[in-house]
Length: 369
Ligand SMILES: *[C@@H]1O[C@H](CO)[C@@H](O)[C@H](O)[C@H]1NC(C)=O
Ligand SMILES: *[C@@H]1O[C@H](CO)[C@@H](O)[C@H](O)[C@H]1NC(C)=O
Image (cartoon, rainbow, N blue to C red; front, side, top):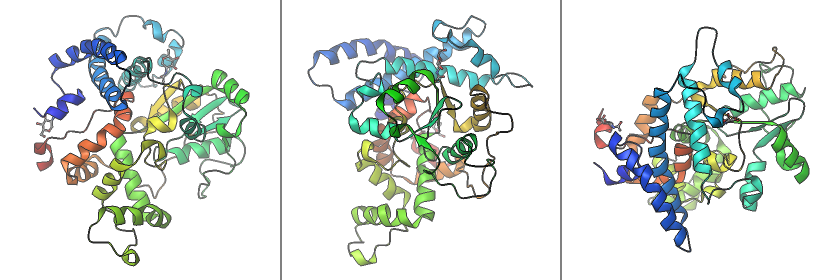
C-alpha cells in the first residue's frame, strides 16, 4: 500500500481506521506539550481523526437507524423529518447530513480551531464577512462559494429583496449590486444576525470545483487569462521566458495545479480558495450545509426552512452551463503528475475532511482505465 495514502487515513481497510481514531488522543496530548504547533501537523491529525471518526459514525448510524436521535440532534428534529419527499425518504442525503454535521462538530472542537468569528485573524474574518450575504426580511445568512451554484443563490436573494422580478429573468448576474454583505454591517449588527439568523452554505467535491474554476476562468474569461494566466505561464513554463509572447490563454491544468500548490490559501482568488477558508465552518456554526451533488433537494429544503413564498423557486441550470462529469474529472486528474496531486491535497484537506468527501483514488492502476 502506498505510504502517503495510508497517512491520509481515508481509504484504508476497516481495521486501521479505529486505531487511528484511538491514537488521536495521545497524539494531541503530545502535541500540546510542544511549544509550537505546526499547522501541517495539526492538519494531519485532523485528517487521521476524521478518517477514524467517519467510519465509526457511519457504522453507528447504520446500525442504529431506529434509535432516537442522539443528543446533538435534539435542537431541530423536525429538520430531518421534513427531508422526506412525497415518494419516500431521501436516506442518503440524511445520512450525509448527519455525518457531515458530527464531523464538523468534532473537528471544530479541537483547541486550535477557531470557535467564533472574532477569534479569526483580521484577514480570515475579512474574507468570511465578504462572502456572507444577508437577508433581513427572511432572517438568513448565506455564505457563497464560487463554482457552487452561487449565481443561482444570488438570483434568489435578489428576488427576495425585490431587485429582480423572477429567478428566471434572463440577465447577466451582477455579483455585487443589490446584495447586502455581512462585511458592510457594524460589529453589533453582525453579532445579532449571527446569533438569530438561519445560516447556510453549499459545498462541492473540492477537485471538481477546482476543475470547474479552471475550465471557466482560463478557458473563457480574458481578464483571468491576463491577470493569472500570464503569471502562471511565466512562472511554470520553462520555454516561455519572453514577456511579449505570453498571453495566458493556454494554461494547462497541470500548470494551474502547480500554481495552487505554491499559493497561500488565505490569499487565493475566491474561485479556488478552499471552501473552508471562504466560509469558516468552525467559526460560524451553520444550520445547514448543502451539497452541490444534491443541489435540487437541498436548495428546496433551505427555501422551505427560510419560509420564502412558494412562488420563489431555485433556478434551473443555466443553458450554457457545462457540467464537470466524473469522466472529465478522472481524465484531468490522471493527466497530473501523481506527486503534484499529493502536494495539492493538503491545501484542500479541510474541504475533504470537514465536508466529508473521499480523497481521490491515486493509484496508478486507477488511471489506466
Ligand atoms: C447539526 O445538528 C444541530 C443539532 O441538531 C443542528 O442545530 C444544526 O443545524 C446541524 N448543522 C448542520 C450544518 O447540519
Ligand atoms: C483505486 O482504483 C483501483 C483500480 O481501479 C482499485 O482496484 C482500488 O480498489 C481503488 N481504491 C479505492 C480506495 O477506491
